[in-house]
Image (cartoon, rainbow, N blue to C red; front, side, top):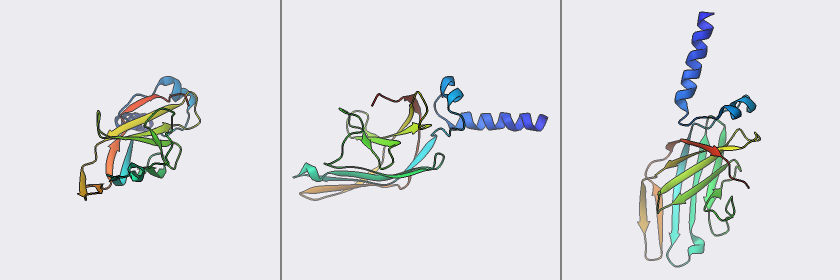
Length: 164
């Protein structure tokens, strides 16, 4: 009995340290057997900027969350549609993941992952990384790639999903 109690406490302790946010009790009660997003990797992060024709601009990378089993490609170009109307949030190929990339304000790459897809109410985990870029410039374009790949990120925010 003591061993089972100790294992249970260690498991709970390990879980609480892995998450950088608090999961609401109401979600814990309804989302049974849910794996909450804790950390992720971004690989092959690239930004192409055309000086002459902004419709050629592209941001792309691969996203992976080993805990939830998501592996997807993410990109933004002139034909991309935001995941929420009036936002600069872009969907990845897996609809449970989206991103915001900005170079002003809070600069960096924010990743957003739906927690416990299908649960009600719906929550999202998010986290920000700031890729260190090396750029190759010409008179007509710039290509920047992350110096490190993969980049490890942690989800440190957990909020209700905005209405769709």
